[in-house]
Length: 354
Image (cartoon, rainbow, N blue to C red; front, top):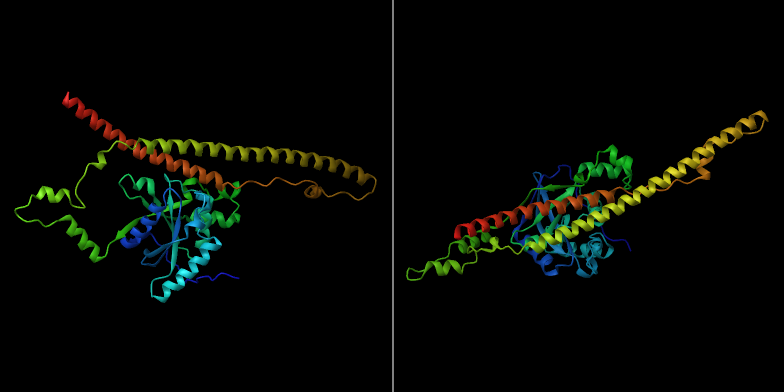
């Protein structure tokens, strides 16, 4: 049975930023945080206006179909189960007059590890029906440190051109022709959060608690939901850096393994080309003898029937691993600088006390 497909109007104006509703953000983070450390995904809905992508609704995909074994590669919004679930949810949302235009999907990540083949394949599939498709990546581990980590990405025009020219094979020729590097796979879009008027009023009320004259203001402020705290000075983030370094080493090992596969292909190709050249030289010699004997000659292009060149592995895996290594390095640099500043601050305080 064919799965229903949602047909969207043709979009011509590209988007340059995204706006997410605070209610959608809470739903998204609730889903990813409760499922942590398993990797989950969901669909985001909305519309684009004036080159701004407005995200107005989102719903999660069934957990059993997204990450049954906790592997990022198993997160596939375009699987048959998720496509069927997506069609049913969109039909129900339309019945209650809720915006039901898919504009992408969201995924959760562990320590920024989201550069994989499944993510790229899903974005390419979504892009075929909506050129303004984006993916929201929520890094739960970074958010647990006290700072919300939610970023919006889309496939770059450079990557899409290389993908179209190579038919999704990403040969070395296509990568060099389009000057494609690991920095050109995804491009980040500015993402802002939009609060409703009621939510803004609530935040202002929480920020300014009312208290009577006879009550102690310090007591009430310390019990406020937005009361200042010293969590930002906590030094127990070394395990975070340790895990980043550990995953970085694993990614470097994957890179060398992938490079070894490509080097093996080049050696196999060189051997086959040497055999082909020997066969062509031998054929030329035999053809010269055949011409003297007035016999039909053999075409030099018949080597294609005699030999089969090895298939070049896709260079996309190498680019994705390189992008993941760059992601880990950026995180180590960012959090390493924060830890260094805290350590210098503590050292200065100890020197003053002494």
